Image 1 (cartoon, rainbow, N blue to C red):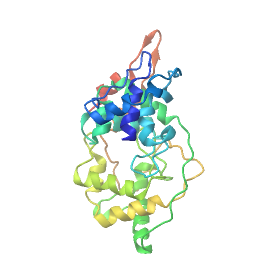
Image 2: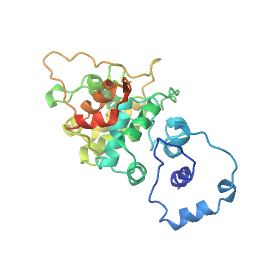
Image 3: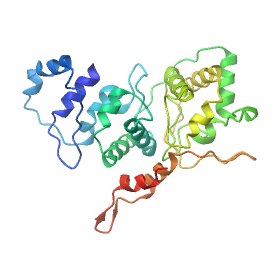
Image 4: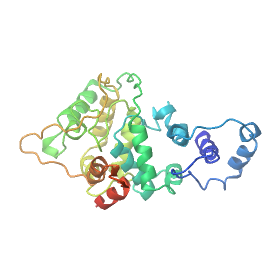
Length: 286
């Protein structure tokens, strides 16, 4: 309820061009509409709002926490500091139905690729401290199993190590691979479970789906439990390059990588002509 009311209020802000106003089809809810109308102090407020991304993304931070630092319950994940290509891909996935959450889909469905890209780039620049990890739970055997899968994988089952793609420090690889640290166990487990059951998808080839379908429920719980308990390194920024491949292993192909690579490669302007990054990225879509 708090998130939805904030989104409705955000719609009333006097945004200027060129960014598109966020509009939602939430006004059909009588209770929400009456809640908005019953706030005369807000409606009649003489305060002027700055026309900046911090103000325009209030609909995002209403759920994802101030400056996108994550909600206290862990259900809404951190946005701050994640690679722009990853955030852009996820916004596109919610808009195009590869990820499903009604409020997210309604929020971003009217927005252009260029605006989604601007939102992604804004949150990627925020350098907000991470909270301390929660104490480890589960048995030593469970945690050892999680550590082994994250750091070494399981060659017999063709499960690559998580660090092979997400970076040796597990802080992510720019521009399109997120970090794995600073996330609650329940969130990690739910996302891995969503891939396993097909509720979460990505551009084909969906590399995470191919990895997660080889994991058991115990594997998922072990990975989530171990990752959630790990301390953050001093440098939490995503690195620019993946670790070298182990001898005899092939690189994993991910359909979302071309989109993020295009995002990083296309200049904003060439001479006098402005280039739409998102339109160029669209050409890279599988």
